[in-house]
Length: 207
Image (cartoon, rainbow, N blue to C red; front, top):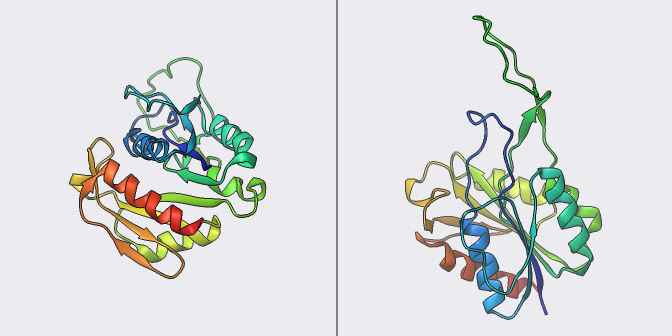
């Protein structure tokens, strides 16, 4: 029995101009497809208006720290981890409790790195766990994606282009490249459920 963790959206810092915008569509597609194949699925998700897949165990989170804690607690019993989340890379160094008054001049905003959730799970993964990550890049940079795969000790990384209008966060379709240490396979434009099925085919070969 496969226990998969499909991690999806967590809230961004309350600075919408610098936040990455994402949806839960890809993560939910993987969760639904895995459950349909008979897997015991744990879905870690932030706020979403989309319908959650039937039959999966849902852990809801609000912050990147909660996402890490939820994944860390589930990892010891997981055979497969699919991290489809796109949490923000930076957060404000300080949070104002009230609206900042307008001064008429420029202000300086300090941004601190957020937690590398997937990289932080390396030491709590059990031996043999298949780990799949996602990488969103401005351009289709396979070598950069492969560098992330090696740094985070992944088995495969799914590369997305941020410039592809047909494969955006809110789109029902996606155009991806499956990157491993030795290969890169381009997939044509297809539904996110179809991408999920192809991803799980790859996972079965890795198990």
